[in-house]
Image (cartoon, rainbow, N blue to C red):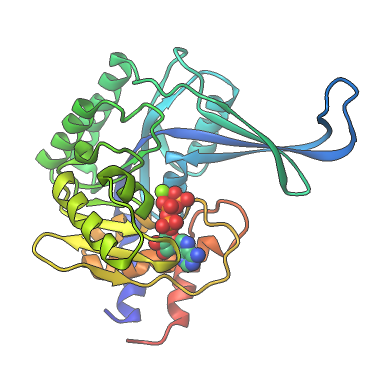
Length: 331
Ligand SMILES: Nc1ncnc2c1ncn2[C@@H]1O[C@H](COP(=O)(O)OP(=O)(O)OP(=O)(O)O)[C@@H](O)[C@H]1O
Ligand SMILES: [Mg+2]
């Protein structure tokens, strides 16, 4: 595909697509300050508070990426009726996402990771979360939400950070069944070791460590990638496996085909966190705009290259993706 075709699709087709993100919504909280002294109470620094910041993380970062690409985005997951939960709902709604698929419950706190920092250095991270399976009521709510919106959806992205929403394989199976019955494209990114949990998905995007751990193959030499990827593809029951490999890009595995590698962009890296969310978002929307998997993966690498060259976890923006494509030579 040449760059004019890419531009045409990104510009005119992405905005027509409806995507539902189902997964573990999280809040990343940063508390910054100056350290001037040690505490007289214990051998720890005293952080002189100056600033705090909330950032939408986990599955909500996938939401931000899809919105940045121009898609119409619905969100399903759970939050508590606490400060973080209310902030997250307002934030996502403010970005233009439809948040009525978010089940609110007080049975557990909103997943939040708090970093205490000084001069950009982390002093401490505090996690407040429950990683238990969510309640039957929450599952029923999310399932009903998917059912009632299925007719209008082009894709569903499962974003599983092992925080509970997608912990129950029979629940996930049910959701994927609904997607299949409605011809909805299914993408999954999961840290799970239960390889078959997302069987029936069109694409799955584990990173190389997740693949290695799930199939129990240590990855040392290039052939190990082949062996682990093939095993994961077979056991996972997904149509196409996309293994993200950091600076080595993305390797594609599909039935009866040999592995194909797509190189990462050669960029100056500032912050790689969130690159996986950018990859699955970009490849999903490109796929439902009828790009072939190879063209979609190339676009995924370009988008990831943009977000990692910025400080902090940032989402891709359509304008930047267009600019990057404009800069490449036609091939
Ligand atoms: N150092 C790098 N140089 C160039 N591209 C990179 C680099 N690191 C990551 N990428 C891009 O980002 C993509 C995803 O990165 P990676 O494989 O690290 O995913 P991940 O571990 O799931 O990330 P995340 O922290 O978001 O979970 C890669 O396939 C590649 O396109
Ligand atoms: Mg990841």
